[in-house]
Image (cartoon, rainbow, N blue to C red; front, side, top):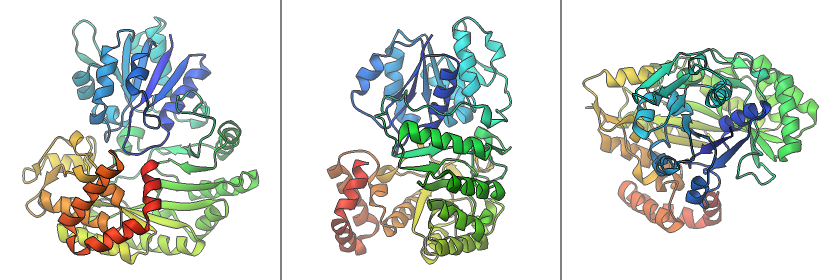
Length: 470
């Protein structure tokens, strides 16, 4: 029996490495698999879904895009050629039971799925008992009840996994511009807002450097990538391993630019590591700062200090690596004034860029327990409806000290000050519609700087339009 995997349309484009890993595992077992990549290729959407004739279909879901996948799910439910509808991804790991029950899926995969997906295919072919699979939610065909089949340990030796395969993606045209590279999984830290522990586990599992370099060299021949990026949750945890990776990358002669959009902790960066990263091709790193207000920062249990962040940025600046910072608005204990101080802090740090988002809460995190268990906090909407961007940005909760309208104001003011017009305008819609949205938001939240914003947009129109097209 063959299988079709689907990556729904997301807020931003990019290849789904998780599905590529599943494809690699299935192909290594002689299975037939293809991936419908709706996130990077959106033409003929309905036709591509209606033409699916695989016995099994698996959909990868992130919490930020789960709600927007309803049209896709409706088409899948109408396709009677599909025997089993599976769902997986981070959203199913943290909230799978409710999603399966609501949208009619037959099963949902919990956590990492390279082994589970192969085992489920064998079950569908009548060669394995369902109870032996583990790590799934399953709908009983007779009663309709959603049953849980026990948790199994994550794969400990990541070097045993076949390399990800992107050739089966229907968006693949012989070239990958920016190759996604996974070198480790899991994170041991206890940040109260982060769901990585629930999805990939608290135990950090790393690939051997030899295995990583081998993948890069093979991927270069296969996909002809121009650069690559690290998609780990905690790439720099073992600084010795990271330094070894940089040295081996230099020795390999690959000579490709690379960057770290996440997975870099400031307290793990020293000048030797940053220098090696730069020499081996690293152009930029993103660091989670979250808040520039000490009391708010300390409440997050990140296990590092603002001083670590400040020092890391200075050291990176010396080497020539660009640094971007992530900030979270509306954190517990914060106020509008605190978030404006974070904005000022971001400017004082001399970051290349600063990215501001409203806080989201995930089941299985300490933050979830704190928010849902505090009667003084008013929940405004279901947490799955809180992942809106641009003109639709909405907070999921408010407090007596920080009203929803002020949280929205902080979001728009922060992003306007950093010239993130595409963020405030939203990720979808025509150029004209998004431009009008941005202008309305500027008039509402930063009227005094209206002409300054318009002048900047016109001056950088070519750059703005290139981002829209991408």
